[in-house]
Length: 89
Image 1: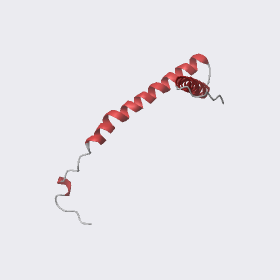
Image 2: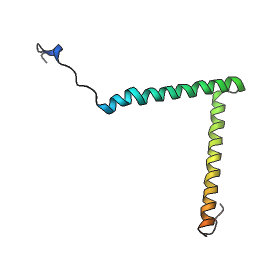
Image 3: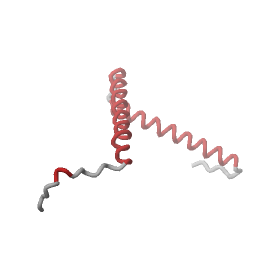
Image 4: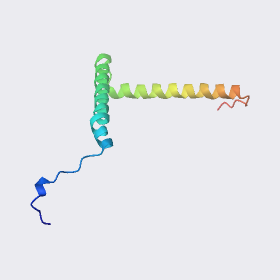
């Protein structure tokens, strides 16, 4: 490969608008949110004396239980409204 005289004069092509938006808005916002969550988790862990993994596990289990409860309630309500037999499993 040979290098011409105007090699250093050529401007590289600019990144696309979606890439600029992603690099300047989305990624910094996501990093800031993750950092904020980490600080909050660390503060809760220090105040409660629990390890962060225990807090995260408890939060995940609580979220699953709440989601399951809401799903069951919605399923029961839709079965009641549509006059279909309610199957309890």
